[in-house]
Image (cartoon, rainbow, N blue to C red; front, side, top):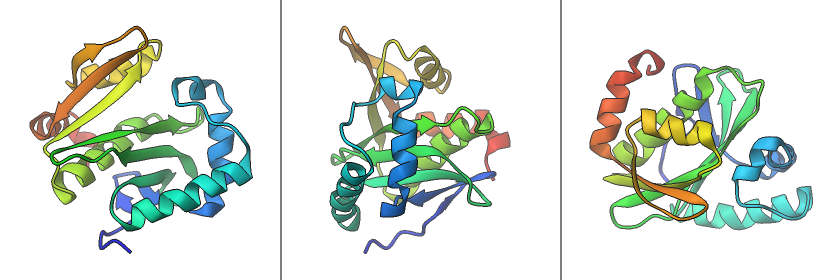
Length: 177
């Protein structure tokens, strides 16, 4: 088991580690309209449970962390994951938030992930890709000052530094606790 303190706490939300019991919720999110921007998955709840069981081994080794985004009272709003760790960089994704979630959930979940990855895990940079057609998420990352470092016909590839995060925290201070 890893030695980190979970859940990760935001001002209005918490990020707790995924469990097998979350498989049905994750499947429901990944069947919605927003899921078209994520890597497609096949199968149902059993397949998701099998994926989570395999993931939990990577989590125990500190190689990856997959979170349920929830209210402080425990209502599940979405998912977010950090993975693909290199010496100085991490990737994040699997970020999907149900439509009925409060508007602050997106910014607070991003702030929590960056806080954990930069200030607890010690990474210096984040790398991630976003589908070009996911216009709202592309705009979100650009507002946060993530930099497009390359693109292909489907994706933009971003980098975001620890220094960028410090600026983001100041800009979105009202969402920080």
